[in-house]
Length: 224
Ligand code: ADP
Image (cartoon, rainbow, N blue to C red; front, side):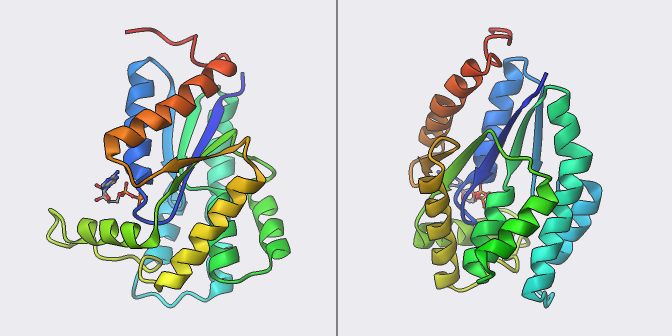
């Protein structure tokens, strides 16, 4: 049986990873077989690529950046995502191919046709069944990223290389995400990420539960 592939997208600080964790834990409590992963860095090779890609000290050429994200994704699709989906698991990924369209396409300015080709090569055509787009203003996401940076770890988290990009870069990325959602309203659902963590979580469940029910992947799980 084919599993379900759900991706979480949005600009940095929009609350994606918080919501991936919360949804994964609810689905697991219901007895579902969940894989929680992310891009970049979902595989051991990807973790090493992630370190290089997000290192604020690293000078990464934009073309090298595009290809490194593609390499991370190629490994992720072949080693983790396809096998998990073939085994019928529910896969939740913090970012996937839409991020390349938004960041390397709109953010860095690569031609949409080139980006589409690189994405097609890396994914081998694997598309998410559902994408949740956490939409937040650039000002609010910046505020959250700053809070995370100065939080309990005494600021040890620091800002990664992409977080340090200028505000207009993040604004282009946000707009690109909204355009993707407008072009594919069936697959991409916009979530208002300015709400509280609990309100957003409730909205996520309102989208994900019927989605899994329609696929016959909710009813099979144990009730508490
Ligand atoms: P992302 O994965 O999109 O970068 P995170 O989930 O790491 O975002 O959240 C960024 C920061 O904002 C974290 O410190 C997190 O605790 C906080 N945060 C997440 N969701 C909310 C929310 N709805 N309201 C306020 N703060 C939030």
